[in-house]
Image (tube, rainbow, N blue to C red):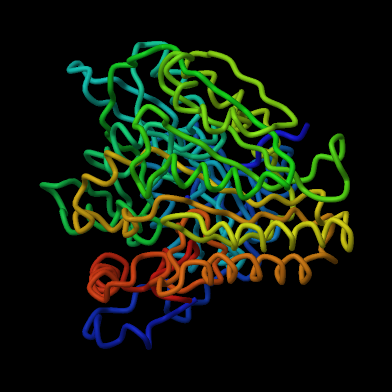
Length: 511
C-alpha cells in the first residue's frame, strides 16, 4: 500500500516612496561586471581567498551539483548556475556581499522542499546551508542552538538521544527553517506551539550582507516578521530554540484504510473528534488522504488515515473508539518511541513524500471544520479522474492534516507574523504529474479542489499556509487579511530589504 503523502526582479518603482533618498546599491546599477554567464571557475577565482577553507563551490560539471540542486518539486525548480556551500556562518555574509558587488542574485537553500512556483523565477547563485548543521544544547537544558542548515530528522534524533524534544515539522526531510520561518506545524504544537513560537533568537544575514542578532530585545520589529514571514527578510545562519524534556517515551499509532462509501461517517467522526479546535492535546497529529490503492480498487480512491497519540495504547484507543467502529479495509496499530513515529506515519526520510525530483502541482486551504458535502464532491472528482486520467490520479493525493492546537491557540495572534491561529485543518491537494504534458490538467484539478474547499466555508477568505502555498495566491492569503499585517510587513521590507533581494519565496512584494 502506498504510504501516507503529507506533506520553507526589481520593484524599485513600487517602493520609491518608501526608500526615497536611499543610494542605489551596486547590484542595481548598470555595471560592466554584471554577469550574464556565471561560472563556478570565476566564483572560485574571485571569492576563494575570502571564504573559509571548508567552503565548497560547485558548478554544473561537478558530480555533487545535481544532488545539491535537487528539489522536491521540479515544476518550481530555480535556475541555479553555481552552488556555494559555506563552512562557517561568517561565510554567508561574505558570499552575499560578493553577490551584491557583482550583480548576482542569491538563494539560500536548506532541505529543498519549497514548492511555490515563485522559486522558478530565480536565476543565480545558490547558498547551500548543508554544512551549517551543528546542534549545541545549552547548560540550562532549556534551549539549544541550531545551525541554519539543520533538518527535521537529525534534529529529532539528536535531541531524543539526549532526553529532549522540540517543535519541528512533520516530515523528517524538511529543513527546520524552511518550515519555521513560515510558522512550522508539527506533532508537538499542541504542547508547545509552532516552531516559530519557540525561536528565542536568530543570527541573520541581511540583504546588504550585514550580520545581526534578532530577538525580542534586538531588532524586535524584525523578530516579529521572521516568525511567519521570515523567508522575505534574510538568511538565518543559526538560531536558538526552546527544548523540552522528552516526556512519555511511548507513542501509539493507528492507521486505517476505508472505502469511499464510509466518507460521510469518517468526516462526521473527525468533526466530533476535533470539536472545532478542541482536540485532546495528547492526540498530537492525525492526517488522512484520498489516494489510489489499486490493491483494493482501481475504480476510485480510498481513505487512508493515520493517528499519533503521545502516550499508551489504552488511552489512545478510548479516544479512537468512533473510528474503530467504522468498517475498515485495514486497521493496523502499534507503539513506538517518538523518534520513530514519522516512520510508521509515512513521513520519514525513506517515505515517498520525501522523494525529490517529481512534478508536483498543488493547492492549499486552511479550514476550521470539515464540510462533509464538500468532501464528497472532492472525492467524486477524484473518482472521475481515476477513470478519465488514471496516470495522473495514480500519483495524486488530497490531504487533510490536523493537530492538537491548544498551545498554538493560547499565543496572541498579534505577537508574530504568523496569521492563522484560528484555523484547525491544513489541507493540501497534491498531484504528481507523470510528465509535463499533464501540467495543465493537474492545475485545473488543483484549482477545482481549492474552490470546492472555499465554497464549503462560505464567508471566509482564503487562508493559505505559506509553506504549502503554490505561489498562485496573494500576499494577504499567505500573511493575513488584516490590513495592518501587510502594511507592517511592507514597512519592514523597506527598512531591512529595500531592494527586495529576498523575493523568491511567496514574496510580500512581488518581483
